[in-house]
Length: 623
Image (cartoon, rainbow, N blue to C red; front, side, top):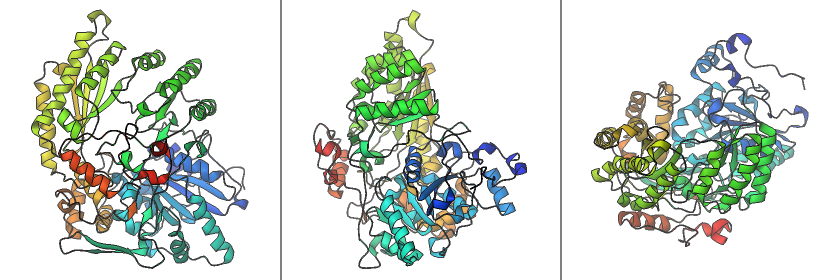
C-alpha cells in the first residue's frame, strides 16, 4: 500500500467546487488499512452532504464495528453537492469513497442509510454517479450488493426496485452473519449474486425485495404480498441489541475537516422510549426501551473527550429525561466537563421532568435556549396523541426555566393531527402567550435578560408506518397553509405578541413526504421519473421543486392523493405488513381507537400495555 493515497479529484476540480474538504478524506480518526488482508470492501453512504452525514451516529457505529474486523474495510461516501455532481457526470469520473479514493463500483457492498424520505432522489444520484445500474434487476455480478438500512426501511417498498437488500433493525446484529455467508460462498466457489441474495434472505432482519411479489386490488390497495419461493420467509423480523453495554460504540470517531451539523461528542444513553406518543414512529419501532449503564457511559464520555477535542457533549436518546440514572450522569458530566471547559447539551428533555437543579448546574457551564415539544396547543389534542403532559406541567416547567435564568424557549408543535379543530390550532399561540406572560410575572425586571423570546415552530403531521396513526389521512397543501395562517393570525392577537415568533414547515414537502412514507412499490416509478426530470436534494428548500414531482406522478399515472387523502381501514393490507417489528397490529388498532376517544395510555415503566415487544426478552419489558 502506498504511503500516500492519490486523490480521486485533480486539484483544478477541487479548487472549482464549494468546500473541497468534503471530498479529500484523510481526516483525524479515519481508518486506513493494508489492502492485502481485505476480503470485503464496504462503502457506507449517507445520501446527503458530508457535513450532514458526518453527524449521523448510526454510520459511525457501523464504521467502528466493520473496521474492527481484519477482513473488512468500511469506507465512507456522501452525496456530492450539485456542483461536483455535474462535474463527475461531465468528465465521467465515478463517485469514490473517502478513505481509499477508489470508485464505489469496485466495492463488494454499498450500504445506504435511509434516514428520511426526502433523500430518496439522492440515493439515485449516488447510484448513477457510482456508475451502478439504478434498478437492482439490471445489476451484474461485478456490481456491489446495495443494502438499505435505517428508519425508512420500516416501509421499504417505494425503494424496492433500487435495492438488493434491506436490513430491518439495529445494525449491530446481523452483519457478521451476512459477511460470513459472503466469504463462505466465495471460498466454496458457489458465489453468484442471485444465490447470495437467496441465502441472505434466511438471515434474521434481512429482506430481499426481488424474492417477493405484490398484487393489487381493483381499488388500488394491496391484495397480496408473498415470497416467490417456499424457503423464503413470509415475514421479516426486526433485529435488536438486547444489552447496549455489549454493543460496539465509536469512542474515537472521525473528526471532519468541514464543520458538521452536529459538531460535538454524541453520547447515546439509551434506545427506545417508554412514552408511546401515537404519532412517533421512532418511539414505536425502537422499542423496547434499553439503557446503557452509568459506568459504561462515564467511560465513553472520558474516552471521547480525550480522543476528539470537541468543546460540547450531547446526550442522545428519544427522551433523555427518562434515563433512570440521569441525575448521577449529569453530576459526573458537570464535574468532568467543567475541568475541560466542555459544554453539556441535554436535548429530548420532557418539560414535566426537567429538574431545576440540573438546569442550574448545566447553566453554570454554558447557558443556551431551551427546547420543549408540547406537540399540540390544547390539552384535548395532547390527550389524543398520548403526549402525557398537561398545561400545568408545561407552565411549571417554563417557570422553572425562567427562574433558572433562561429567557429563550423554543416550542415544537404539529398541525394536521387526527381530529384537530381550529380551536386546537389557536391554542398553540395562546399557550405560547401564557408562557411569555409567566416570564414577566415571575422574573423581576432587574433580573431580566431583556425581553423573553418564545419561538413556536410547527411541522405538519405525517402518518408513519407502525404507529397508531398509520391509518390516518393527510390534507392538501392549501389546507396546511390555511392552518399555519390561522396560527399566525392568532399569534398577532396575543397580548405578548412581541415576545412571540412563529416558523412553519413547507407544505408541499410535507405532502410528498406523506406519499413516500406510506407508498407501495408503484411509487418507485415516480421516484425514478422525478430524478430523471432533475429532482435532487429535495430536503433542501432551495433545491426542492414540487412541479417536477407532480409532473412525475402524472406521467406515471399515479395519483398521490390515493396515499395521503384517505383514512385507511384497519383491515386493509398495508405495504409494510410483512415486517414484524415486535409490536402487534392489535395494539396499534387499540391505540388508534383510544386516540379517537382522547384516552391517555400510561407509559411502559408505569404499566406494561402489552404492545408485543416483550418477545425480544430485554429492556424495560423485563426490568
